[in-house]
Length: 107
Image (tube, rainbow, N blue to C red; front, side):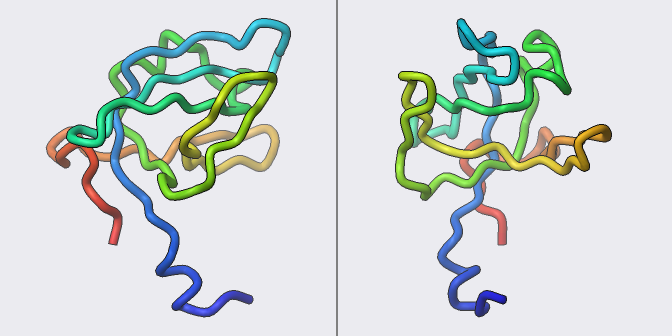
């Protein structure tokens, strides 16, 4: 269990996926470019390729954890984490309404 104080440290923001493409040499990974508004764009590497096509992600507003330490995945820098629900077969992104501003904070 974590405390509410620990959970409060997690920063989740609304971001719009502006591009998505497969990561060369991987069947699981997609490279996303995500617009968070004033924060500019960030690169996100995510293991969601078996659930969704890259072209179906472009323009989608989703929830991202944005205060994780950047991480190298297959030689690519990932600067946030997309939020999704999956049991291995069923998959759903945590989408955000289009009327939410880019970079809007989940509270």
